[in-house]
Image (cartoon, each protein chain N blue to C red):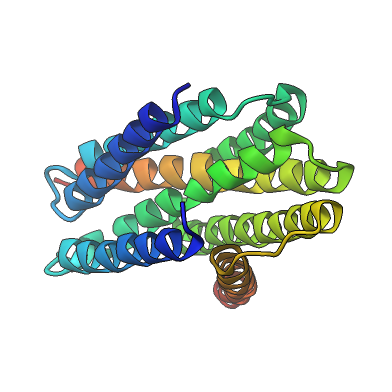
Length: 96
Length: 150
């Protein structure tokens, strides 16, 4: 595919995602601010996909080292993020 | 895996993320929302592992085990009152990962271009620059936030 076409379709997805994100998080009760922040942080760990590709494809030794480090950080972000969010929500449940 | 099939699974992951975030905005659906987000992440990770050809799993497994272990320990051991700075720290690690991925992509692209004598497309240079910038801001900003809250 033509590089310009790829760039435009990337920008299209990006802009649509901006609006979807904005529409979803409006009108949220204040008690859920922290869990939502934590949950969306965990989802931002999707960068793990790029990290996995870098670590696995072994283009050069440097990309493998960087990739492995990135996989480690991203997994920490994903696992920790979802677990912490779950703990927060459990706490809310006990209060009710 | 067929690239088109992989893209459909990525779409499924994105839909799960959106539904997960939507769930997190209501008290009654919040737990389910978080689980949907985690499921989306699982779908995305399994898809990328099946879709990328010639993957060496050794380093991936090393990274996942180390990161997962530290993540679980931190998330379970942390005091409830220390949650906000923990979230900041996790966020910082995610930003750090983005920053490193951008660095690896840059190195890979330059390496390839030098070998083949081709040109680097705008798509790549823009996404690498933006990803590196956002990753670095996230990492340093989150560390400062962690330090202020601790």
